[in-house]
Length: 120
Image (cartoon, rainbow, N blue to C red; front, side, top):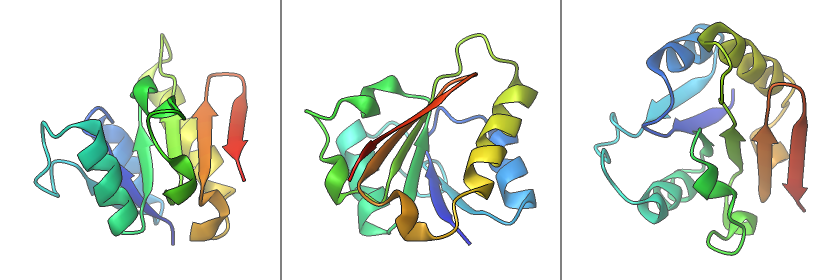
């Protein structure tokens, strides 16, 4: 079961759908980190060996964040995508990840029509 850490910008419907599909999801709010800076959010995810799930494009800055030390960062570019589409895109991608370590050290950018993976 994948362990995810959902940033506070991730919609609760997404969190609920992931949990309903067997994913272990902890939110920033549940961890008591609401309003924390991005560095603290990523540190918590790393320390707790969780893949960070966010809509915040700032986490895609490979010069600011050491993605290679992370358990994976998944940035979803929501734009004008409907909530149900976002849920389906995330579930589809996450369902194809077999092991927690599959995303270790990787940055994943998920858009409506394509997925880019950077890293080791």
